[in-house]
Length: 457
Image (cartoon, rainbow, N blue to C red; front, top):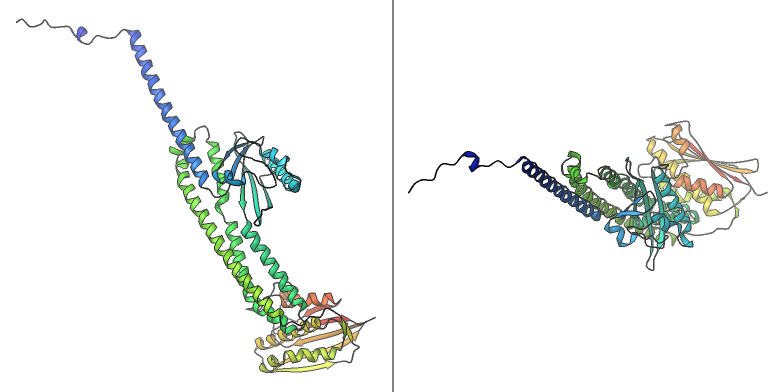
């Protein structure tokens, strides 16, 4: 059998015609472009899914609106109820106009809705970088409070603004409860018939108020340091890369950090919420303690709101009796210069409140001075239709800067002081058309407090 004749190389690997080679190269290029587009599309879809999942994990209801007020993006929390705040009174979900909803609100909330619409328009126009509005709502169960914040994206693309609603009911209730407790404390002190009763309230409540104040400051500090505001910056960054979001999140170094950052941010917000709940629980506990103390002391208070003729000498003697135990324990010498003056017309419990408080402060000042000889001087004079009662001590004295603030509510130089006593006394003197003043030559020079009250015309 004869072997086949050898074939030429051209016959074994025939070269395609030039036109076929061009078509083949074109098909390869088209195929590569399609594959790249498919990958880009898949990356974009994945980025959008990630963004949606991230927004839905955020506890704060959030919506993004365009320059016309149309809602273009929302998270799950928004769809669960905050999409239609009570004062708007209509749905405001994806694709609907938030400004129109505000403009067409019910009459009961027209002021809040118009204010919100005006604030949104100012942010969209760029005349205001941020808008904040606190509003209240009512349900069959209880009253609630919310804070709505509006911020604008800072980019060169289409105008977008972020609208968030935060439920601040617990914080608001704590603030109201604290205000009511303080008002109740002041009213109790004002109406106490004896300064000893009022001082008991202040002494017992003072320490609790310190804890309340610490909890309130911690709560406010945590709110001020909240990382929630970073959401707007993340949204701005994502909007800046809207056209290449997939590449930005998967290839850009900053973009790659966003998923981890958002996860950490979500965890931080959960921690912030737990801390807020803890501080609010402490506030509630301490406020309950204050109410118990106030109610207990009120049961012993002798109340009288009627002015009556009073002997100044008798008032001073009564005040000395109420402070007698403390004066004797600290070995305070009493010096009296009491002129005979006409009776004054005033509410007895208010005058006693002032005198007993001033005597107690003088006793403490003398004791803190460390002097061997401690004195408390009482002087009564009459001039220009007024009775003047001066209480002096040779105690630690008062610095000039402290002298200016001595009657300010909450100011105290005592380690365990509450800063309410002298403020309450000054207020009581004013209510009787009188004055309470303080004088001191400086530290170590003692102090004099003078109460002036008008004589009957």
